[in-house]
Amino acid sequence: MFTLNCKGRLLAIREPIVMGIINATPDSFFRGSRRESVLDALETAENMLAQGAAILDIGGQSTRPGSKPLTAEDELKRVLPVVDAINRRFPEAFISIDTYHAMVAREAVSAGAVIVNDISGGSFDEAMLDTVASLHTPYVCMHNKGNPEQMHSITPYEDVTREVLDYFIAKKAICLEKGITDLIIDPGFGFSKTADLNFQLLKQLEVFSVLEKPLLIGVSRKSTIYKTLGITAEKALNGTTVLHTAALLKGAAILRVHDVREAMEAITLTNRLK
View 1 (cartoon, rainbow, N blue to C red):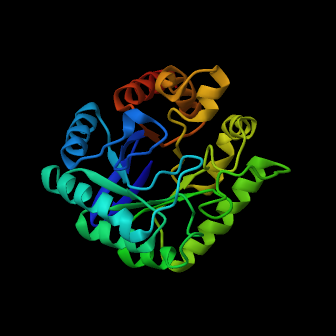
View 2: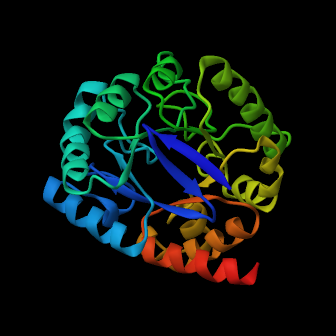
View 3: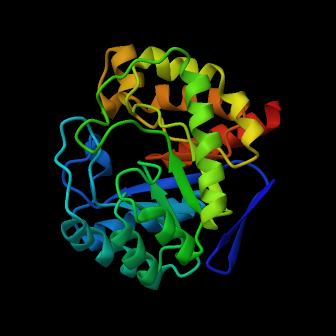
């Protein structure tokens, strides 16, 4: 069991939970996740909460291969209206802001977000870790390599699981020193890793339990699934559920997903299996 202090509200993870993806962007890799209006995002939030999502993750920056990085100012134009509207309509929701800009994190938390989800682990913006510490929010720290333009470049690993684990051991120490105690670990599936490396990480996922932090898995509809199966992201729901099941059996605490109902079903059945 893990307990996260989300700006004074406790989120208890007694069994795996679901984080629903709300992309306030016109160019996310999965067309079905694109929410280009506040009303569309509100409808999605309502459906996800009704289906059992514990967290809503709002992002305005596409991180698909080949995407152009946004400035913090442009990202704010996309996400702030969505965060504010969802917080007003669903004040009980736990909202996460998906950003690697410290300024976006700060403004989004002011608008109602209570978790910061950073794909860079604090490496793209040197102010991020100090900012999160000052905000007193849980922090999703993801493994990644390179800068925003390079993060999808494949880099060599001698032992991907060991290197990712070493990365988190170091990041955990840094975060604790900064004052970030509610840390969530994301191995970064699909970032600077081949499909084979992603499968290797998934196969050895249980080793991350030594960190004693919640483990977040983000494989939903990603290329590791659809390229392996020779299909498209639009047809990758079944494959996503298969990998979600594998991750749950190996200790995943949070599933970051496009499809909440199916992920909740995987959690229910996996819990019975355990």
